[in-house]
Length: 304
Image 1 (cartoon, one colour):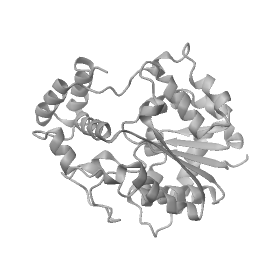
Image 2 (image 1 turned 90 degrees about the vertical axis):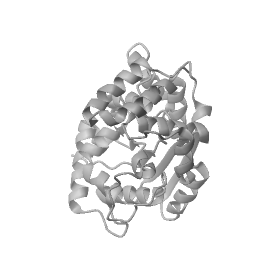
Image 3 (image 1 turned 180 degrees about the vertical axis):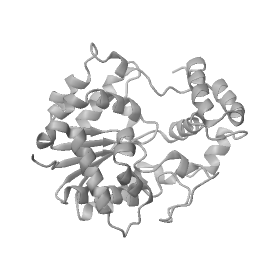
Image 4 (image 1 turned 45 degrees about the vertical axis):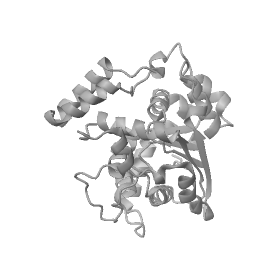
């Protein structure tokens, strides 16, 4: 059986709160169809559970330490299983995960921080983007036994105030204790300086010196249509796979067969809901909070 040897790997890195979950659900729902067109899609859950050694290496790895043989064996095995009988035809791997650059919790939350052995412990959202991407690329190159891969690193940006507010709301929804902390205080104490498009491009550009890497930043606001979410999906495919767009877009945007894929699955909540969430969080366990979050999203939705 021919071994999986992709010519291209696309890393869709969010950013957080830029419609990533919507894109991911559509890709996951059409996993088999994408395989038929030579594209292997991996989302956050698959990445963290099936490729967990690669995920741990991205998060915790030492920059001077090569990926272990155990990591490369597990990663190749998981990718081969995901590709199923199509591995010989796979030319592109698409990984979509908004935590590739960094997580909201480790970038913005000081309380109960776990110290990393690789010393990447300072606050600042996406502060360690370059190191994390470098480890991910290294891990996959070792897995496939080649550096002859075309890389695309893409990410969406948002207007800064909207981005900061959305990150604040997401942290509250996830159950991080923000009791007594206003948005203004959160904005003032949080470090978003590493999350700007210019900063991220500056961090990523040195990686192009020894590899064929294309960096594609794009505006979230300029590519969405609130009345038709499929516009975002259409625009995204044209950005990352322009040569395949005509074949892939009709498959992904098939409203008669996948109506539920185009609904909002990570809804925001109103100011009243946020106020209740911040006051109520201390009385709930982590498991109870997951149920209460659904209650808030259902009963206190934010009007668009």
